[in-house]
Amino acid sequence: MGLRAFALGLVLGFLVAAAPSCLSNSCNSTTCRGCCLKGLCLNPGRQEACGARGVACAPCAAGETCRSNQCIAGGVGASCTTALECGGIGDSSAQCKLATNPFGDPYRDGYCTRPCSAQSDCPGGSYCLGVWRPYGEYDVACWQGCQSPSDCRAGYECWGILGLSASVCWLSPLPSPDPGPPAPPGLIGSPCSVDGQCQNPPDDGFCLAEQVDGGPSGHTGGECGAPCDVGRAPHCGDGGVCVTSQTTLGPTSFCSRACVNPNQGQGDPEDGGCRQSYVCASLTTSDGGVAPIGRCTPNCNNPGAGCRTGTCGSSGYCQ
Image 1 (tube, rainbow, N blue to C red):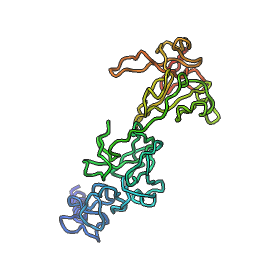
Image 2 (cartoon, rainbow, N blue to C red):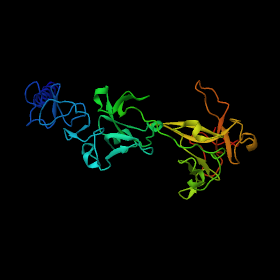
Image 3 (spheres, rainbow, N blue to C red):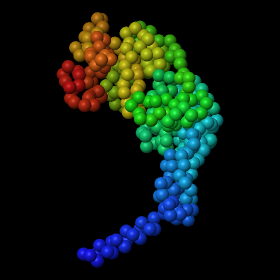
Image 4 (cartoon, helix red, strand yellow):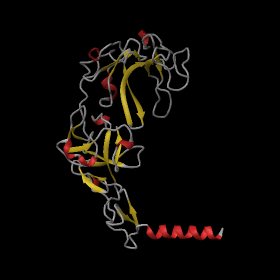
Protein backbone atom coordinates (compact mmCIF):
# COMPACT_ATOMS: atom_id res chain seq x y z
CA MET A 1 0.00 0.00 0.00
CA GLY A 2 2.84 2.36 0.92
CA LEU A 3 4.60 1.55 -2.35
CA ARG A 4 1.46 2.43 -4.37
CA ALA A 5 1.12 5.75 -2.58
CA PHE A 6 4.79 6.49 -3.23
CA ALA A 7 4.37 5.69 -6.95
CA LEU A 8 1.23 7.86 -7.22
CA GLY A 9 3.06 10.72 -5.54
CA LEU A 10 5.85 10.48 -8.09
CA VAL A 11 3.35 10.60 -10.99
CA LEU A 12 1.48 13.61 -9.58
CA GLY A 13 4.75 15.38 -8.85
CA PHE A 14 5.87 14.84 -12.42
CA LEU A 15 2.57 16.17 -13.85
CA VAL A 16 2.70 19.33 -11.73
CA ALA A 17 6.29 19.95 -12.68
CA ALA A 18 5.56 19.35 -16.38
CA ALA A 19 2.45 21.61 -16.59
CA PRO A 20 3.22 24.93 -18.31
CA SER A 21 3.44 27.74 -15.76
CA CYS A 22 3.93 31.43 -16.36
CA LEU A 23 5.49 31.78 -12.94
CA SER A 24 8.18 29.21 -13.68
CA ASN A 25 8.86 30.69 -17.13
CA SER A 26 7.90 27.39 -18.81
CA CYS A 27 4.71 28.86 -20.33
CA ASN A 28 6.12 30.01 -23.64
CA SER A 29 5.72 29.62 -27.38
CA THR A 30 7.15 26.11 -27.16
CA THR A 31 5.09 24.74 -24.29
CA CYS A 32 1.79 26.65 -24.68
CA ARG A 33 -0.30 27.20 -27.80
CA GLY A 34 -2.61 29.56 -25.88
CA CYS A 35 -1.86 32.34 -23.39
CA CYS A 36 -0.73 32.64 -19.76
CA LEU A 37 -3.45 33.35 -17.20
CA LYS A 38 -2.65 33.43 -13.47
CA GLY A 39 0.32 31.17 -13.91
CA LEU A 40 -1.38 28.60 -16.16
CA CYS A 41 -1.56 28.01 -19.88
CA LEU A 42 -5.08 28.75 -21.18
CA ASN A 43 -5.88 26.91 -24.41
CA PRO A 44 -8.22 27.58 -26.12
CA GLY A 45 -8.53 31.25 -25.25
CA ARG A 46 -11.71 33.07 -24.30
CA GLN A 47 -13.16 36.43 -25.30
CA GLU A 48 -12.00 38.00 -22.03
CA ALA A 49 -8.66 36.14 -22.01
CA CYS A 50 -7.19 35.56 -25.43
CA GLY A 51 -3.70 35.11 -26.80
CA ALA A 52 -1.37 32.62 -28.46
CA ARG A 53 2.21 31.28 -28.20
CA GLY A 54 2.60 31.80 -24.46
CA VAL A 55 1.88 35.53 -24.28
CA ALA A 56 -0.04 36.98 -21.34
CA CYS A 57 -3.82 36.61 -21.79
CA ALA A 58 -5.69 39.84 -22.65
CA PRO A 59 -9.30 40.69 -23.51
CA CYS A 60 -10.27 41.18 -27.13
CA ALA A 61 -11.21 44.72 -28.12
CA ALA A 62 -14.73 45.74 -29.12
CA GLY A 63 -15.59 44.29 -32.52
CA GLU A 64 -13.08 41.42 -32.16
CA THR A 65 -13.66 37.73 -31.44
CA CYS A 66 -11.23 35.22 -29.91
CA ARG A 67 -10.76 32.47 -32.50
CA SER A 68 -7.92 29.97 -32.49
CA ASN A 69 -6.40 31.88 -29.55
CA GLN A 70 -6.25 35.10 -31.54
CA CYS A 71 -8.35 38.27 -31.46
CA ILE A 72 -9.81 38.53 -34.96
CA ALA A 73 -11.32 41.79 -36.25
CA GLY A 74 -14.83 41.76 -37.69
CA GLY A 75 -16.46 40.20 -34.63
CA VAL A 76 -19.97 40.85 -33.36
CA GLY A 77 -20.59 44.60 -33.17
CA ALA A 78 -17.77 45.59 -35.52
CA SER A 79 -18.36 48.21 -38.21
CA CYS A 80 -18.80 46.93 -41.76
CA THR A 81 -20.16 47.57 -45.21
CA THR A 82 -20.43 43.93 -46.36
CA ALA A 83 -20.56 40.51 -44.69
CA LEU A 84 -17.00 39.84 -45.92
CA GLU A 85 -15.78 42.29 -43.26
CA CYS A 86 -17.38 40.19 -40.48
CA GLY A 87 -14.90 37.29 -40.64
CA GLY A 88 -14.22 37.46 -36.90
CA ILE A 89 -17.61 35.82 -36.29
CA GLY A 90 -16.20 32.71 -37.93
CA ASP A 91 -19.42 31.48 -39.52
CA SER A 92 -20.87 31.54 -43.03
CA SER A 93 -24.09 33.03 -41.65
CA ALA A 94 -22.28 36.22 -40.56
CA GLN A 95 -23.98 39.32 -41.88
CA CYS A 96 -23.43 43.05 -41.97
CA LYS A 97 -26.59 44.72 -40.74
CA LEU A 98 -27.07 48.12 -42.38
CA ALA A 99 -30.67 48.79 -41.30
CA THR A 100 -33.25 47.44 -38.86
CA ASN A 101 -35.67 44.82 -40.15
CA PRO A 102 -38.36 45.61 -41.18
CA PHE A 103 -38.47 49.35 -40.39
CA GLY A 104 -35.17 50.35 -42.00
CA ASP A 105 -33.52 52.62 -39.43
CA PRO A 106 -29.78 52.70 -40.22
CA TYR A 107 -27.05 51.00 -38.20
CA ARG A 108 -24.29 53.60 -38.02
CA ASP A 109 -21.27 52.32 -40.01
CA GLY A 110 -22.90 48.86 -40.14
CA TYR A 111 -23.06 46.16 -37.45
CA CYS A 112 -21.51 42.68 -37.76
CA THR A 113 -23.76 39.94 -36.42
CA ARG A 114 -25.34 36.60 -37.27
CA PRO A 115 -28.83 35.09 -36.82
CA CYS A 116 -29.28 32.86 -33.78
CA SER A 117 -31.87 30.70 -32.04
CA ALA A 118 -29.89 29.98 -28.86
CA GLN A 119 -26.99 31.50 -26.92
CA SER A 120 -24.71 28.71 -28.13
CA ASP A 121 -25.00 30.12 -31.67
CA CYS A 122 -23.17 33.33 -30.67
CA PRO A 123 -19.41 33.89 -30.30
CA GLY A 124 -18.03 34.57 -26.83
CA GLY A 125 -18.77 38.04 -25.54
CA SER A 126 -22.05 38.38 -27.46
CA TYR A 127 -25.65 37.52 -26.66
CA CYS A 128 -28.52 35.98 -28.63
CA LEU A 129 -31.51 38.30 -28.15
CA GLY A 130 -34.72 39.42 -29.83
CA VAL A 131 -35.50 42.37 -27.57
CA TRP A 132 -35.49 45.25 -30.08
CA ARG A 133 -38.92 44.68 -31.65
CA PRO A 134 -40.46 47.81 -30.03
CA TYR A 135 -37.77 49.79 -31.89
CA GLY A 136 -38.31 48.20 -35.29
CA GLU A 137 -35.75 45.36 -35.25
CA TYR A 138 -37.57 42.03 -35.47
CA ASP A 139 -34.52 39.84 -36.13
CA VAL A 140 -33.17 37.58 -33.40
CA ALA A 141 -29.39 37.93 -33.63
CA CYS A 142 -26.10 38.09 -31.73
CA TRP A 143 -25.38 41.49 -30.15
CA GLN A 144 -22.06 42.68 -28.72
CA GLY A 145 -21.79 42.46 -24.93
CA CYS A 146 -20.55 45.45 -22.92
CA GLN A 147 -19.87 46.57 -19.37
CA SER A 148 -19.75 50.35 -19.85
CA PRO A 149 -20.56 52.91 -22.58
CA SER A 150 -16.89 53.05 -23.54
CA ASP A 151 -17.16 49.45 -24.78
CA CYS A 152 -19.48 50.58 -27.58
CA ARG A 153 -18.50 52.68 -30.60
CA ALA A 154 -20.04 55.97 -31.66
CA GLY A 155 -23.74 55.71 -32.41
CA TYR A 156 -24.29 52.89 -29.91
CA GLU A 157 -25.10 52.66 -26.19
CA CYS A 158 -24.47 49.95 -23.60
CA TRP A 159 -28.06 48.93 -22.84
CA GLY A 160 -29.01 46.81 -19.85
CA ILE A 161 -31.41 43.98 -20.70
CA LEU A 162 -34.20 42.99 -18.32
CA GLY A 163 -33.59 39.48 -17.01
CA LEU A 164 -30.02 39.37 -18.32
CA SER A 165 -27.02 40.00 -16.09
CA ALA A 166 -25.08 41.48 -19.00
CA SER A 167 -25.62 44.51 -21.26
CA VAL A 168 -25.27 44.85 -25.04
CA CYS A 169 -24.30 47.52 -27.54
CA TRP A 170 -27.20 48.77 -29.65
CA LEU A 171 -28.38 51.89 -31.41
CA SER A 172 -28.42 55.23 -29.62
CA PRO A 173 -30.69 57.09 -29.66
CA LEU A 174 -33.28 54.31 -29.81
CA PRO A 175 -35.23 54.41 -33.10
CA SER A 176 -38.86 55.58 -33.10
CA PRO A 177 -40.31 53.85 -36.17
CA ASP A 178 -43.69 54.71 -37.65
CA PRO A 179 -45.98 51.63 -37.53
CA GLY A 180 -48.12 52.94 -40.37
CA PRO A 181 -51.92 53.16 -40.44
CA PRO A 182 -53.84 51.01 -37.95
CA ALA A 183 -56.18 48.17 -38.77
CA PRO A 184 -59.72 49.29 -39.64
CA PRO A 185 -62.45 48.44 -37.10
CA GLY A 186 -63.25 44.73 -36.91
CA LEU A 187 -60.42 43.52 -39.17
CA ILE A 188 -58.30 41.89 -36.45
CA GLY A 189 -59.63 38.40 -35.77
CA SER A 190 -61.75 38.25 -38.93
CA PRO A 191 -61.67 35.16 -41.23
CA CYS A 192 -59.00 34.97 -43.92
CA SER A 193 -57.06 32.62 -46.15
CA VAL A 194 -54.20 34.85 -47.42
CA ASP A 195 -52.23 37.78 -45.98
CA GLY A 196 -53.68 40.27 -48.47
CA GLN A 197 -57.10 40.00 -46.83
CA CYS A 198 -55.57 41.40 -43.62
CA GLN A 199 -53.60 44.29 -45.11
CA ASN A 200 -53.59 47.83 -46.49
CA PRO A 201 -54.15 48.86 -43.81
CA PRO A 202 -52.34 47.69 -41.76
CA ASP A 203 -49.28 47.32 -43.98
CA ASP A 204 -47.92 44.50 -41.82
CA GLY A 205 -51.14 42.51 -41.41
CA PHE A 206 -50.98 38.74 -41.81
CA CYS A 207 -53.31 35.75 -41.95
CA LEU A 208 -53.10 32.86 -39.51
CA ALA A 209 -54.43 30.38 -42.08
CA GLU A 210 -56.61 27.40 -41.24
CA GLN A 211 -54.19 25.05 -42.99
CA VAL A 212 -50.40 25.21 -42.45
CA ASP A 213 -47.96 22.77 -44.08
CA GLY A 214 -50.84 20.55 -45.16
CA GLY A 215 -52.43 20.25 -41.72
CA PRO A 216 -54.89 22.18 -39.55
CA SER A 217 -53.43 25.06 -37.52
CA GLY A 218 -56.24 25.35 -34.99
CA HIS A 219 -57.29 28.75 -36.41
CA THR A 220 -60.55 27.54 -37.93
CA GLY A 221 -61.57 29.79 -40.84
CA GLY A 222 -58.30 31.66 -40.59
CA GLU A 223 -57.65 34.71 -38.41
CA CYS A 224 -56.32 38.16 -39.30
CA GLY A 225 -53.54 39.49 -37.10
CA ALA A 226 -50.69 42.01 -37.09
CA PRO A 227 -47.56 42.67 -35.02
CA CYS A 228 -48.01 45.46 -32.47
CA ASP A 229 -44.53 45.70 -30.93
CA VAL A 230 -44.46 49.10 -32.66
CA GLY A 231 -47.65 51.10 -32.22
CA ARG A 232 -49.09 48.87 -29.47
CA ALA A 233 -52.91 48.71 -29.03
CA PRO A 234 -53.79 51.64 -31.36
CA HIS A 235 -52.19 49.70 -34.24
CA CYS A 236 -54.76 46.93 -33.73
CA GLY A 237 -57.71 49.29 -34.39
CA ASP A 238 -61.16 49.21 -32.84
CA GLY A 239 -62.02 45.71 -31.69
CA GLY A 240 -58.39 44.64 -31.37
CA VAL A 241 -56.10 44.19 -28.38
CA CYS A 242 -52.28 44.02 -28.26
CA VAL A 243 -51.04 40.86 -26.52
CA THR A 244 -47.41 40.39 -25.45
CA SER A 245 -45.88 36.93 -25.22
CA GLN A 246 -42.58 36.35 -23.40
CA THR A 247 -40.00 34.04 -24.97
CA THR A 248 -36.54 32.99 -23.82
CA LEU A 249 -35.00 35.40 -26.35
CA GLY A 250 -37.28 38.37 -25.78
CA PRO A 251 -40.92 39.55 -25.93
CA THR A 252 -43.10 39.59 -29.01
CA SER A 253 -46.47 41.32 -29.37
CA PHE A 254 -49.37 40.71 -31.75
CA CYS A 255 -52.94 41.88 -32.31
CA SER A 256 -55.90 39.66 -31.36
CA ARG A 257 -59.63 40.31 -31.40
CA ALA A 258 -60.79 41.81 -28.11
CA CYS A 259 -63.71 40.29 -26.18
CA VAL A 260 -65.68 41.25 -23.08
CA ASN A 261 -66.39 37.89 -21.46
CA PRO A 262 -63.03 36.41 -20.33
CA ASN A 263 -63.20 32.73 -19.37
CA GLN A 264 -66.91 32.55 -20.29
CA GLY A 265 -66.63 30.75 -23.61
CA GLN A 266 -67.49 32.15 -27.02
CA GLY A 267 -70.07 34.71 -25.94
CA ASP A 268 -72.29 36.61 -28.34
CA PRO A 269 -70.31 37.96 -31.33
CA GLU A 270 -72.81 40.83 -31.59
CA ASP A 271 -72.17 41.80 -27.98
CA GLY A 272 -68.38 41.71 -27.69
CA GLY A 273 -67.97 37.92 -27.94
CA CYS A 274 -65.88 35.79 -30.30
CA ARG A 275 -66.48 34.06 -33.62
CA GLN A 276 -67.63 30.47 -33.72
CA SER A 277 -64.74 28.08 -32.87
CA TYR A 278 -63.06 30.76 -30.71
CA VAL A 279 -63.31 31.47 -26.97
CA CYS A 280 -62.55 34.54 -24.88
CA ALA A 281 -59.33 34.01 -22.93
CA SER A 282 -58.34 36.20 -19.99
CA LEU A 283 -55.53 38.73 -19.92
CA THR A 284 -53.76 39.82 -16.75
CA THR A 285 -53.37 43.34 -15.42
CA SER A 286 -50.05 44.80 -14.26
CA ASP A 287 -50.83 43.74 -10.67
CA GLY A 288 -51.61 40.15 -11.67
CA GLY A 289 -55.41 40.43 -11.75
CA VAL A 290 -57.80 39.52 -14.59
CA ALA A 291 -58.39 42.35 -17.06
CA PRO A 292 -62.00 43.18 -18.02
CA ILE A 293 -61.08 42.79 -21.69
CA GLY A 294 -59.87 39.43 -22.98
CA ARG A 295 -58.68 38.10 -26.35
CA CYS A 296 -60.30 35.64 -28.72
CA THR A 297 -58.24 32.48 -29.04
CA PRO A 298 -58.94 29.20 -30.90
CA ASN A 299 -61.15 26.71 -29.05
CA CYS A 300 -58.68 24.02 -27.98
CA ASN A 301 -61.04 21.38 -29.47
CA ASN A 302 -60.47 22.79 -32.96
CA PRO A 303 -58.55 20.48 -35.30
CA GLY A 304 -54.86 21.28 -34.88
CA ALA A 305 -55.32 23.36 -31.72
CA GLY A 306 -54.88 21.24 -28.58
CA CYS A 307 -52.98 22.30 -25.45
CA ARG A 308 -49.27 22.77 -24.81
CA THR A 309 -49.86 21.80 -21.19
CA GLY A 310 -52.81 20.20 -19.46
CA THR A 311 -55.88 18.84 -21.24
CA CYS A 312 -58.57 20.44 -23.37
CA GLY A 313 -61.94 20.78 -21.64
CA SER A 314 -65.37 20.73 -23.22
CA SER A 315 -65.55 24.50 -22.61
CA GLY A 316 -62.79 25.07 -25.16
CA TYR A 317 -60.13 26.07 -22.62
CA CYS A 318 -57.00 24.18 -21.62
CA GLN A 319 -57.18 22.90 -18.05
